[in-house]
Length: 173
Image (cartoon, rainbow, N blue to C red; front, top):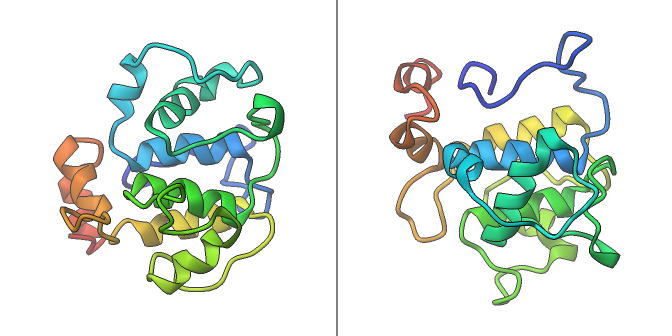
């Protein structure tokens, strides 16, 4: 993910793979996986959340506007709250074109659904570490959108969000 320009390390160095992943970190990774980072930066309007830090605001706003991300009770996003496997898988599934509102999956079972359709290689449950978040995201790179139009990595390369040479070198295309 680092080679593709999708993740950065933490301020103290490294990737803090064993640290709990937060909802804000997941939102930023999701919009980087979408290949729509430039569109997200240019988007206007509000996500309706007042508790999102500046570094994650455009990702949360764009993800919310696209219907990929939802807040929690009371209209708050709780960006520093640890993200659960079901919440992260629901974010990803929505980005890929699946809909919980149309009955494709239930948020309460999103991680199991993701495993059943091959989005994740193993069962995830409870809160995720940053390593789990990255592992699921890396697995999603070669997964196709629901409409079969492309894989995530193909869209990232096509949009210019990831270099084709890096994707080829990693055997992703």
